[in-house]
Image (cartoon, rainbow, N blue to C red; front, side, top):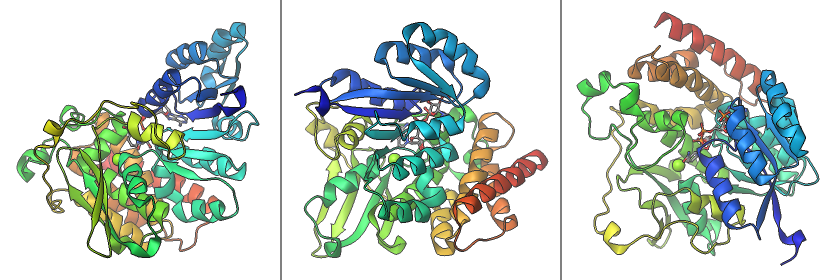
Length: 389
Ligand code: NDP
Ligand code: MG
């Protein structure tokens, strides 16, 4: 294999949970992958450590106040540095980038994704919030671009694997599995007093703090139903969530003849990450193997919508359309953080989201500027609601 076969990555959010696991794959398969761009939000030290190890052409930090520190550490190694959201988005368009890995958290994934699509780069998409916020816009842009999106989210990777060799008209529905999170077996009274430590104790997956709390409220699953709608072009009423506490079946597709295909594996994100980086091809031992003993008990149950009202927000978002999901995402970013900082109780997350939804004007066909304005407005309203809660 020669140098030109090596896929050059721009990793947005390289210091996070998905980012570091992506770099684990790069490190283990240097004949396949290299990194041209690494980026973090505000943590300079881990970014410097990664840059000195993986030698990207450019390291970007979103927090502009950290640029001098980053530059001082990387200039001697001849690694270029930049800061701010615009520099990060611009980095997606570089000639030495073949694929963008969007592993940043929340709304910050939208602009780099849009710029990568504009430059025709393939995308390994972990940042599901991009599709939640602006799935219609992203899909419109994809129609005019050679870019292909490869999902990193384990459920969507599973659906993509189940769809190989199938035609769109043979699909009856998508069945997205959910672990049920740490509160699956809790009753309502106990749930009312759930602490941050309780919410961060996910039974099966080790992930960043924001998505771990989204999993506890099950808003993560609502987001994944929306993500599936945009990725696979399936109508919302044909996508359902089912609770599967073992997290072995990563999702399923039911076909019109009654057959169901499922993708199984250990709960290890390196498997879907490697499948996405390889544009849906397989690497030798990307993740530990699943033993048959681990499959001896696979159970499935209906989600409890009374206990997890955030899950109903997927339907609200898809029925109303337009900027609705953008509002839900923004309010959740504020409420999720406030909960993690001890400024909002667990039950306040749903309340803040729904109260924000009531207060932001609906826009039926938003353009990019409308999403930006909606996000700003919803964040401000949600922040005021948190203060008064
Ligand atoms: P983490 O919180 O672990 O990591 C987030 C990364 O993004 C860090 O590198 C962080 O930098 C960086 N970052 C934070 N804010 C900004 C910003 N404003 N601009 C640029 N970079 C920023 O998150 P995860 O890895 O858990 O999740 C990343 C995405 O992947 C999310 O959208 C999540 O929903 C999705 N996902 C994650 C899964 C998982 O297993 N973790 C599974 C499926 C999907 P810093 O270190 O400086 O804070
Ligand atoms: Mg997932």
